[in-house]
Length: 282
Image 1: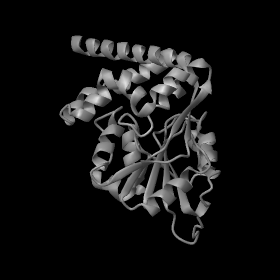
Image 2: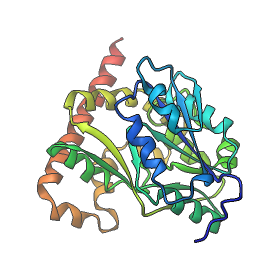
Image 3: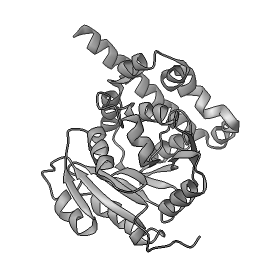
């Protein structure tokens, strides 16, 4: 597709950060390597008052820098509110776009006005066996109810009121459900890479437990409906999402990765039950 680079930018890439000096340069360099012409996108950094060199390192490679907190939902809402483009894409600093992501996203929404948002396939990268397990697990989630859109029409995002800042963890599911009332979603083919570095069981389970703290509030908000039951229920999270639409064949082809994946899922489930028990006693 031939782009008219004389027009105003089409998309704002919003990167939310806090103390991300290790990750920020690979993130912004991947954005600059996009096949979409540079005049067609804006790079915005919304930093949560980092105490390291995140802002210093990023500033030469981004168009605008804002300081805003306290959590990523508030940062993303702030970024979208200050964007002026028809489309927005939000990223964490440990994510890298493959070269054609922006071009494919812009072309897809330009050609399909009924679409309001896009899923981007996510690949987990890092070192060691457990990162391979995490990537295998993540490959089952694309465009399911446990995935979340990232590339969004700005007017639809604003019409929903943006992220619910009272939630931390399922806030992306909540936004998706409100966006779905404005139009359809689609899945592109170009992936983004999520760099998790060296896997740590302790860090992984602590992060999952932290995000799980908002599950009850999210479920209550949506009255424990069928979608919530799939997202939080044991059957779909342990079985359904891995076998639907013929995905069970992938499990059979990779038994070792599958076994590792189910061990992680079991540990996450135990961590969630333990955190519920602990909170109930407080």
